[in-house]
Image (tube, rainbow, N blue to C red; front, side, top):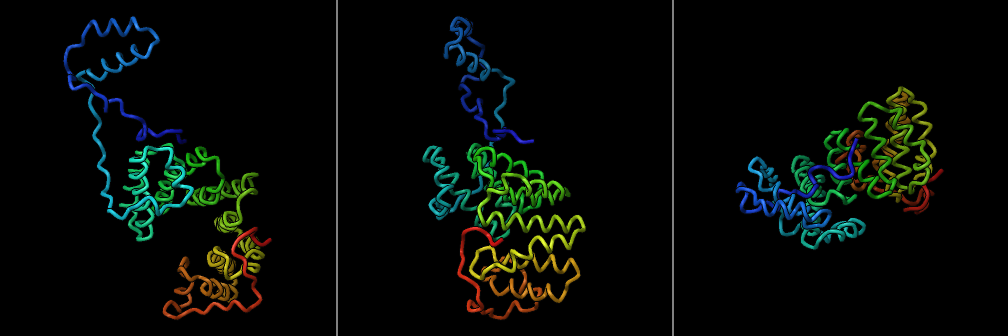
Length: 303
């Protein structure tokens, strides 16, 4: 469905158009080009002749959104900064600035401007996996599932990493294909995911079960993970919230309320709307770390 290199990122031969465009071709130049055979001069001569054709039109350049002075690529994730080193210094700075702005604008839920910056980065660096992933995330947040899946697949192929499987599975749900989401979750690649990605994929699987009307199976899939989750795990709030939602869909309302409350307790960054659902959004939540939960911020997810 996707290609290794989108049309928008291919070098534009018209950018090298001669200032004499539209003039009559020089027959001596043509003859030299033919005589050059397989040498580089022959290829350049053919390019120059094509560029002087009067019917060739330079495609309009898409204006890039303006970058503020504080849009510094130094604020990007280290792995993404490493990827940008494959670019020229000037281009890397520009691409990095656009990626920084994407993050800010997604936080502000300004999805239109975030898309403009993500597309500008992709036009500059369409072969950088992290850039294509970022564009995919913007499409994902906008609910443009087919485009998101195409970008995630491209990023996955460019990087060789499987960390996008949870997002890809969730996109399959968005496309109305929960069975496909379950297939991705059962793939050998999914078994090799890091702990955080495994938890995210489990949440997607529970949602896919719910899509299929298999609510009890969704509860069962998350039950042990939720019970073993600790307050300090970065995924705890999302996991507990997903388990509560599965319980609610299964008709276990009272138990669902209990787990919405447990999610709100550890949701310091407001990743969920658990507190709002409970009508306690204005209250200060106190996280009790003395209830027997271990301090576990990483490693394998509980099983």
